[in-house]
Each structure stands twice: as C-alpha cells, then as structure tokens.
Image (cartoon, rainbow, N blue to C red; front, side):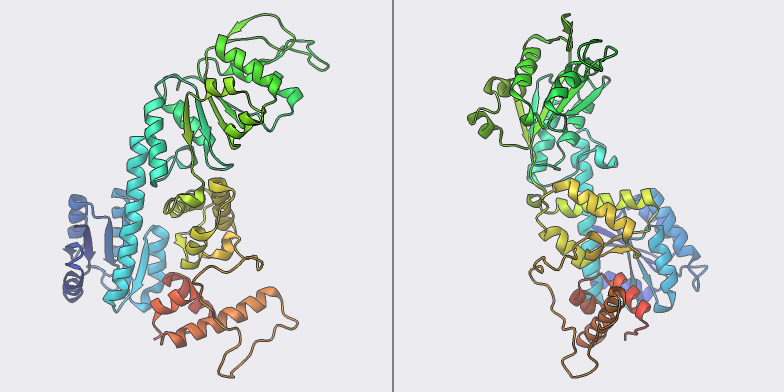
Length: 472
C-alpha cells in the first residue's frame, strides 16, 4: 500500500483525511514541521499533503514553506500538494514556484482530492520506473537527452539489448524513424562499453554530398584534389580506439559501401590521394531510417555490408506507439527547458496532455522535444496549454471527446461580435464567455469546470483571476 504523509495543524482535517484515504493509502500524520520531517525522512512517501499554516506561524506560511523546501531537498521527486485557503492563493503559488506539485483550496472535497492524489501517485510511479530502467541500462536518469528514457515494453527491450551488447565489441545497426533517438542509443552503447574512454565520432552519411563523404570518412593527403592544401584526418581515424557512429548509412553511395566494407574486413584505410595502409581499431555503430531489407532487394544497399554492420540490430519504436512514454518524456523536457530558460512551468493542462497522446508525432522524440522547448519559451503561464505546443492549426481535426462550447450563448444573451477586433481581443472575449458558461454548467464546481474546459484546476484559478470572475 502506498504511503501518504498528511501535514496539518488541524486535528479535524487530519482525522478527515485519514478516514477518507485510509482504505487506499497508508496514512502518516503530522501536525508540525519537525514531526513531518522526521516521518518524511523515515518513510520517504511519494506524495504529501501540506498545510502552509503550521505552528508557530499558523496565520502565515513561513513554516509550511520551510517544510516544503526541506522535503524537496531530501527527495526532489516527491509530489507535494499544498492545501490552502482561498485567501492564501499567493502563498500557494509561491509554493508551486518552489517545486510543489499542485495546490488545493480548502474546504476539502474528498472526491476531488482523491483524483488529484491518484494523478500524483501515477506521475511519481512513472518517474520512479523510468529511473529504475535507466539505472538497469547503465544510464543516468537525470542526464536529460544524453540518456534514454522510457518504460514501454519496446524500450525495455532496447535497454536490455544495450546492457548485453555494450561490452561486446561487435558492430551494431540501429533501425528507426527520423527523430526516434538513434544517436542517443549509439552514445549510450559507447558510454557503457569497453571503448568509453575513446572518442565517440558521429557522421551523417545522408547529409554530406557523395563527392565529399569519402574524404570526411577516410581523410585526404595534401594535393589529393583542388583545395587540399594540407593532410586532413578522417572521421574513421579520429575514432581510433573509440566508436564511429555512421548515421543514415542507408543513404551511402554504392562505391563508398565497397570501401567501407573493405575497412570493416581488414581494419585498414587509405586516405584519399594516399597509398599508405593505416590500421584503425574502432567499433562501428550504424543507423538508418530506411527499410534496409527493401534497399537490399532493390540493389541500393549491399547485402554483404549489411551482414557486416548488422551483427546485432536494435529497433527503436516510433513515439506514437510508446504510450505513457510520451507524457514521461514531455515532463522530462519540461523540467529541463524550464530550468535552462528560467521559466517557472510546472505541468500541462488536460487538453495539452490529450493532444500529446493523440498526435501522430511524425518527427518522433525530436519533434516532441522541439515542441516542449517552444512551449516553455512562449508561454506566459505555469501550465502549458495546447496552443503553447503549436496545436492551433484550424485545419486539424478536433480530438475525439473534445468538449463543444458554443461561441454564442443559447439563451439569447450577449452574442459575440469580432468586427474590427484583433485576434488577441477576440480570444480574450471568447475565453471570458467560455469561462462563464463552464461555471454556470458546473454550478461553480471548479473540478468539473476545469474538466469541461480541458485545463487543470490551477490554470482555471489563474484564468478566473485574469477575467475577474468569481466562483462559489
């Protein structure tokens, strides 16, 4: 049974939460900062509910914020949900800025709080599983894009293969669409392998013209061609004692395939314009996004070269087939770019998460990374909305299950007129009407209104404040 720490100076609230949550979680109760920190250090719960008004500062937030800070120092991945009164909105936001997962305004509705807690445990579980998989694959769970992240069955298979083959000095072929992370996998193999102290040298065979690729790979001697004023070493020589990563090898011209095959067989190269045999000891990791078997059948790729480079093959799945990995990766990128750009972002709205899950991701992980970076740079809110991610093209079909809200009220009240207004003004007016409608339909229930609008509760609170609207 998962453990939850409840920190509140009110005995009535502690009793209410213990009674309401006791069947789902093992509840730990504390009424002061010192007591809370002792229980936190001993039991390391994944989720905490924290009242900011703790003794001796029960009318302020200094003790609650101190408790939050020390908890996050001990366990940065803990999900702390701040419980506060409506009049304490500013301190709740300050807590979120410090790293709290969410906040909830009292009085407590157990059904609403249970939904928030379930989500917090779910996210914590995803992150914990990813860290375990990273460590089992020899990766660093906090290393960002230089590591590999994922918990779906396909990625677990990738991790297991890396662990097996990294220390065995055989050629490896990585298969996967553009943006799936082929170079990241190649780097992980190098970092875990026996050549980790050598250079990791990457070259994109599809991005360099055929006339230049041979020189890039094998180097050239002075005077080998017009403009060759000095001897230049190629990527193969720079990778001596390390790893040579040949990205998009399926795009390599047939003549160069022959020369590469000779090197793989003999471990000897000749620079362009030279006659000296140069021994080179490097591991080859290749990658391609083309159907290699089809290329062999059509004569574009040599079958004997395929057998040389593909002793071990690793298949990377497209992002759209990786399920909950999408949200996991999105949160990893969000934290990284939020820190990099100094933006206080803390999560995604429900609508943004729905888009993330249902979008096809033709550019795979690279496209997701770029969208999250764009969102962090462009947003003015701590919650990333779908529009921040670039999902605003009106030519796109709406997501299944999207809530339909009329722009013109059906009761004959004020209608919207956009004549002579800017796009920003029109959006503001539509936003105001939709907020009013959501509050009316939900009878002031914030959780229901947020679900109808496809945003998180904190985002809805911020929007209501922005538009000067009040709720019950």
